[in-house]
Every structure is written in structure tokens, then in C-alpha cells.
Length: 395
Image (cartoon, rainbow, N blue to C red; front, side, top):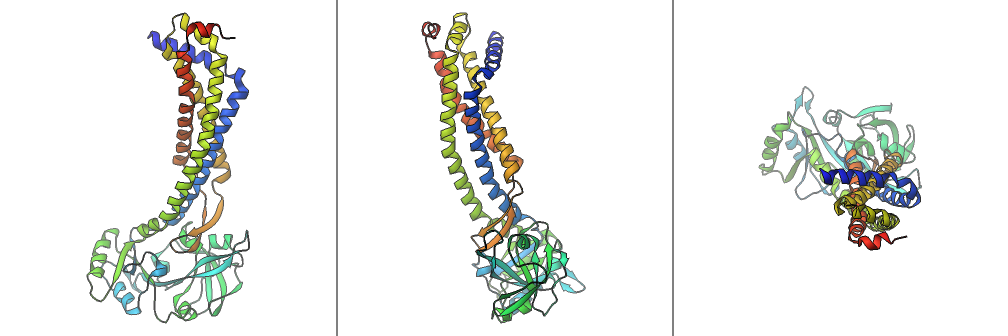
């Protein structure tokens, strides 16, 4: 009880004297805030990319690729194979037939609005059932493309990030000229970064004959996936790989997320070294300014531990304030910022918004508190190791 009373008394007295050291304390707070702001802002890139890649994908949608293909770009399926896939057990069927779409995936050059430089934008050829496989797709401007015509519909994010994709515009890709018929939304998923057209029109435009690259299938239930997969992998006529749509897109985001996390942590670590030294300097100055006061307390019978706690409390408080400010700045500046980057597994652009999540903010504050702990522990221990006589002589 005596230890607790001493700790509260010394800590309260220490924190009340903070305004007298406002300039030095502000330097430490700014250092912590800068580290946290950069840390959270950089990692919000990975979080935003992950969210757009996984959003809208469903466990009751399966994707079929050629065995050994890690992306649609490297896959290839003949028409007979796609028919076998559509007839497999577990596929949802309606009066119009199986809810499955054999698709073709190519990339086209479209200039970015911000820089004017060409970027690889996905152009996906789909069958009519694609809109039943992905019911979240809806036209928000213009009209759907008409089958058999050189018309495209453009994802809302792609229309926002890339130039020339307005309704009514004509563009030349491959050996054909294409007209933008409409713009579609897809619940802010990866599909909003794509351009869609009739697969039967896209095939001759890119000399693909009757070949496809993937088949998207809506299953009867999520539990039907294993039955569907087993039937296809056991069929000697096929050489395919079957996966859930959400697993496929989660894997697609892995490379960029790993890169951003590595770079973000490296940058934050380098900045944290400077911020920690700044905190060390601040706390050593605070201890030096209170040298006689600390020595007097110890001479009166106060234990060393309450002194350590009081110094640590100040350092952690500065770190907490800096972390909150830095997190707030990152949220205000980065959250919702719209951009586009390369998906290194499909070599095509993905438009997305930076996302600052509560988990990222909590991680940033924890990072600041770790810096505050390192910045305060050594001055705190040094304060109680200084001989009382030397402290009383301090001017």
C-alpha cells in the first residue's frame, strides 16, 4: 500500500510538471506521430488491396483453371472442357441451364488519368451466365453490352482511374474497335477494375479461336464444392485445377501485401530508431531537470521503483499522444484515397482505395508505446541509480 501511495504521488507530481517541459516533450510527440502516420499509411495500401481483392468473392463460386496455372493469364481450356465443367455435379442450374461462365482474360493499354501513361487493364470476355454467377454486378450508367457486338461495359473503379472509358467513347484494342456501352458497379470488388465484353466477340479479336482460360461456376451450396472438385479432378478427359473464388483472389493479393508489409515495416523501423533516440533525449533531459527533486524524494524515504514508474508513465503518455495524433493523421489523409497499382501475379492494374482499419490504428499505437517504453526505461533506471548526494548537489 505504501509503494502504491508513493507511486501515485510521484507520478502525479511528474505529470503536472509536463507543461514546464512542453518544448522538449513536443519534439518526442512529433517524432512518435510521424512514425505512426507513415507506418499506418503504408500498411493501408496492403489493407486496401486485400479488401478489394477479396470483396465480392464468394465461397459458393468455384473457379476452374488448367492444372499448373496460378492465374487466368497462364491458363487455357478448350470448349469441350468447359462443357464438361458446366455439366459437373454440384453446379447450380436454372431453367436457362447451368449457372456457369467460360471466360477469356486479356489486358489492354489504357492511359491513367493522373499521369497519362499507359497501364494494363483487364479486358474480360464473359458468357451471359456471368451476371448470374456474380449477381452483385449492376449497370449504373449506360446499358449492358449487346451480345455479338463490339461493345464493352467498364467497371466503376476503372472508369474513375483510367482515361477514355466514358460511355459512348470508342477505343481500339486488338484488331477491333470497341464502344463503351455502360459502366457497372460490383460492390467495390476486383471486378470494378475490369472491362467486360461478350467472349464470342473477344475470341476472334485476339485470335483465340474457340479457347477459353477459365470457367466460373456458381455452386448449389458452398458444401457442394468438394463434390464438384472431386468429379472434375477424377475425370480423365480433364486436366484442371479447381478452387473457390475467394481463395483464388486471396492468393492473388499475397505478393503485393507481402511486399508492402516488408517495406512498411522497414521504413517504420528506420524512423522508429530516430524517434526512440528523440524520446531518450527528452526523458534524459526531464530526469536531469528533476535531479534534485528525485534525490530529495529518495532522501525522504521514497523507494526507487515509484520514481521509475513515474518516468515511464511520462514517456508512455507522450508516446500515446503521438500515436493517437499519427493515427488520426493517417486516417484523415490516407483512408479512402483512391489509386491503382499492379497486380504482380496477373500483370494488370487493380484500382482500389487505401483503407485504415481499427486494427492498423491499434497496431500503430502499440508501435508508439513500444518506442515510448524503450525511450523511457534507460533514463528511468538511470534516475534511481544516481547517488542521493550527487542528486542533491544538482543545480
